[in-house]
Image 1 (cartoon, one colour):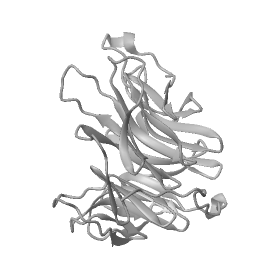
Image 2: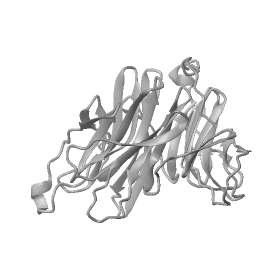
Image 3: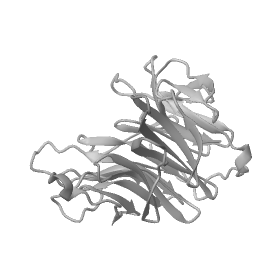
Image 4: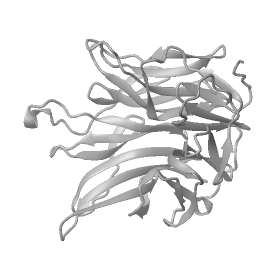
Length: 334
């Protein structure tokens, strides 16, 4: 069975004014919260949820069901994909995408599309990324890294894309072969264009249409302890309004992580100046019209002792919501 393609653009949904949009937050337990932090849904038979996406007024969630079936949740209801597997395997979907009336799921080592199964070629050593899948105009892309069995080999960042009905592997370029590289996120647009984020050696990087770009860092801390340069990386990417956005993490002089945002390669912090803040991460960024939304995590010392852990949703660089006592793994905007 060949993966078909269409020539028209992605379906375009009306862009809502900011005040009419709804932020949906997903926990790993399969609980869905609105922007106020109110729980609005518990996904039935959910063992673990990992990604939520939106399309028009609908939302879709991937993950693992206690019924050991392969499928997805749409607007809180389970939908089974009726696909025939040669072997009876445990199903764990790592990503979800949508185009037109097609649903794409990544159930390693296969890409599933409604009733079709499309295996990845040469993927025995493939480790999928957390943000492993993106779909544009019916074309699906999957990223991750390899896990070489030979101790003398270095790690590579990998991209799988459809070619003549098969998903073939591309090793993303490195500046030197003795460097480890990994891809952690992908965003596809206009069918054939991709932005991939990850790490190259110890540095954050992008691959834009397959071309390596090492992103600048705000800190140079390798001389503080003699332990080498701490790792910085990109965790999520998007392309909107003609600009490339990437979020991730760098390391400060005190060797604690700090949430980062790169706009067209220019770095800046994506963290608050809350008193006691000492650790932060940026985990997700998505585009909506001309706007971008991001999700980050911060940890601060409490005045009376202990730690305060909270999640933040950002809109164009400003915090619009703060959440405590919710373990958020992903979010989307309706």
